[in-house]
Length: 121
Image 1 (cartoon, rainbow, N blue to C red):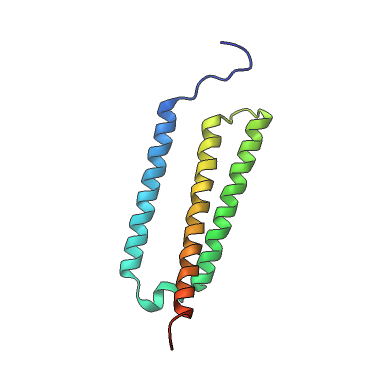
Image 2: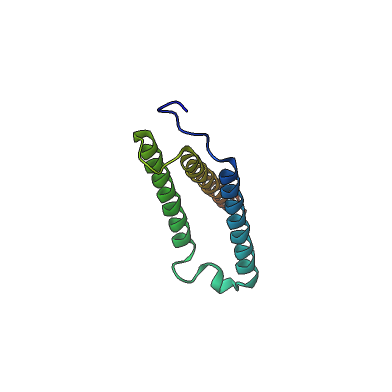
């Protein structure tokens, strides 16, 4: 093997990471569906800070995920030991997907607000 070239990433490891992320996503969806079906109107958004706190927490979570992905990419670029390209790519994809999801939620909220504001009284 030539010096300076890292070995090809283990495909099985990448597939296992993708399967793990998919399982986490499915589990989160089931937990959300269970929470929504069992929540009463008073408990769904008015307790523990309400919707605004939940939205703020989601935005902060996306921000932290993006910062962690950027730090991991910078470590890889510096050649830090123990950081391989698959970790970097997975972290960057996770941060991109979470940002896109947050953007879609924001778009739906803006649409709902505009619909409510355009309703005749």
